Amino acid sequence: MDALSSTLSALADPTRRAILARLALGETSVTALAEPFQMSLPAVSKHLKVLERAGLIARGREAQWRPCRLDAAPLRDLAIWLEAYRKFWDASLDRLDDYLTQLQPKGAKK
Amino acid sequence: MTGTAAANYPEILTTRIFDAPPALVWAAWTEPEKIVRWWGPEGFTTTIHEMDFREGGKWEFTMHGPDGTDYANHKIFVEISHLQRLVLLHDGPPRHSMTITFEPHGPGTKLTMRHLFEDRSAYDLAVIGHGAVEGALQHLANLDAFLAAPG
Image 1 (cartoon, one colour):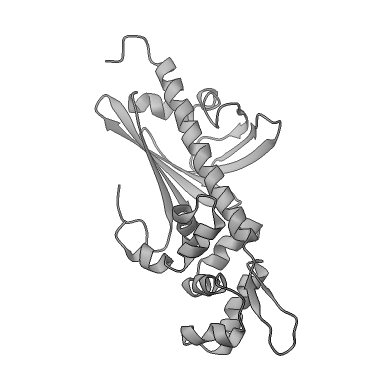
Image 2 (tube, chains in turn brown, blue):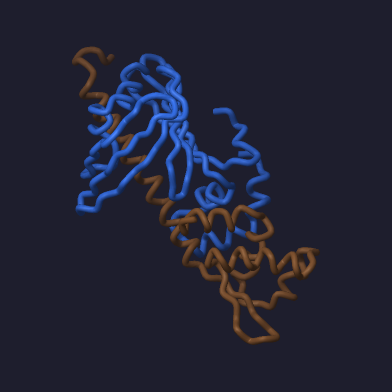
């Protein structure tokens, strides 16, 4: 899967978005992350793995307390892509508008 | 606008009114020699390699940016409803489809483009995102409430 699609698919789940929102406030432990979600630790770990694979979070190496922190780079990439996409279509439709005007025989317009 | 922006599929909606009849707008979207006259922002040119204009047909082209960068594009025509509707699948990344509808609007045409992504998050970020990650992160917390609100 390409990076953008992998970011998108990791973000598709509301719990994972909530986890990221929590991590945007600062790094935290898995146990602390699990608390507000009324979820088992293994269930949270599963979500964290998806986020980690997508490069959206990084986890500390300390054996006991493996803090999670947000890595915003993939989000930035996606936001940049979406902005470029929007601009692309705005600009293309501007050109289409001009081109359609050229295509119309003079006097056809009111 | 259907307003049923899909429980499962997110979309970006773009609407434009053109001062030209639907037949002309349709032609500009479906005839290769016309497409290359406007596709892409100012300064871009487009080379169409293959355009098999029928349902299931492939459309391969390269856009050449003003700085010399080439952008390869692979699309598939999913649906062709003459003068009314065109559905294209953009084969990644990220995969999405474009539904373009052509409706008479007085003497002109109302063009609606619906970009559907394969999951909801692209929509979330499209709504949120103006390139600002900080903004996106702030909004992440409120996403679900936001999406539940009437569009």
